[in-house]
Image (cartoon, rainbow, N blue to C red):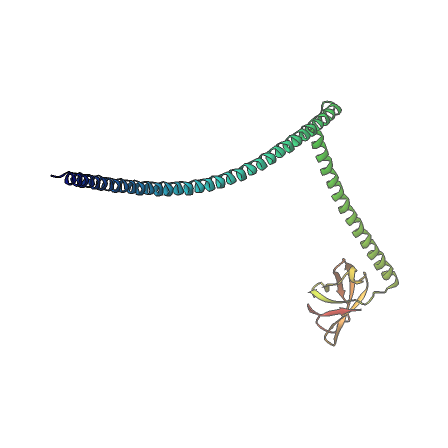
Length: 251
């Protein structure tokens, strides 16, 4: 082989080796790129997962914070209400204490008054005085009632005296005011009648009354006894008819 041929052969061998080395390097580079691409994709997937997790955790944290804020507001409101109740209870306790103190003072004053009264009672009890006062009141009521009865009786006696005095005066004068009544009883055997008029109506002893029935004159009667509401009269001899119960009398 010539010298030129050897050179060309060496050059061809070198070129082939270079091509092999270049191809190998390209293949190796592509493998490295594929690995890098996969690592990049895995990293992105992991990053997306981490971001989603972080977002979920942030959402949960926000919800938890909102819930905590609500609970804090409720707790604050309850605490305020409890403080108000505590203040009211303290005021009520102070008022009760003041009322108790006032009641204690009043009780002591009343006890002192009772002690003073006992001292003034000279050994007698309040019940004794109450009993005496009750008895005195009862006696006063009884005396007042009796006084009223006596006063009523006195007034009645005065009225009766005035009526009798008027009747006496009318008897002396032989006059009776207009009297109108009825016969309530007749006894022909004893010749007398009972009339439903008396002193209160102006009837006087010895006064004469006419007896009639309708328009018919029956006779006369003379009063022999007079009471406030009725009277007894004898039938006079000049009787013109049979006097009966219910016949009218007048003067």
